[in-house]
Length: 152
Ligand code: HEC
Image 1 (cartoon, helix red, strand yellow):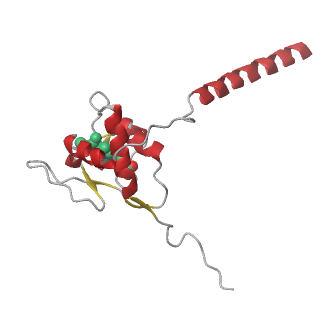
Image 2 (cartoon, rainbow, N blue to C red; image 1 turned 30 degrees about the vertical axis):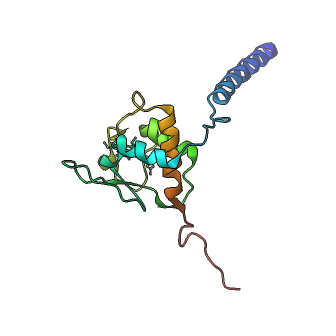
């Protein structure tokens, strides 16, 4: 009986270890793209027609004739840092996490983002430059009212 218990425990920990290993292997730790060029990134953004759906806080972008008004703003005030990893994920895996602040039915359908998938068309260099261009447009602010100020 005791051996059986020990065997079960060993098996269970092996399974747990296996899961751990997989998590560790799928980790984004160590992921780093080289620095890009924001000016080239802006050009790539326009060339890829990202401004069909996006405005960017603090940027004048031309309207695309015959298209509806862009409806998802990039950049601007955020309460949490938009990390490099999050921005890249938003571009190459848009359905992973939908942008905050929009009703789901406005930006997605059946859980899938309305954003085009560019992965077959965008070069890695374009991705690098676009992220370099976008990131400085995010402005982190401390949410109002989150921290109570006690009188002394
Ligand atoms: C057809 C419309 C459309 C086009 C074109 C488009 N997007 Fe999007 N994009 C969306 C929608 C809708 C969302 C919000 C849902 C989501 O998070 O995927 C979004 C979200 C994003 C976000 C995340 C925003 C946030 O606040 O989390 C980034 C970054 C982004 N897009 C970048 C791009 C870039 C770069 C391009 C061009 C290469 C592009 N998009 C082209 C529709 C579009």
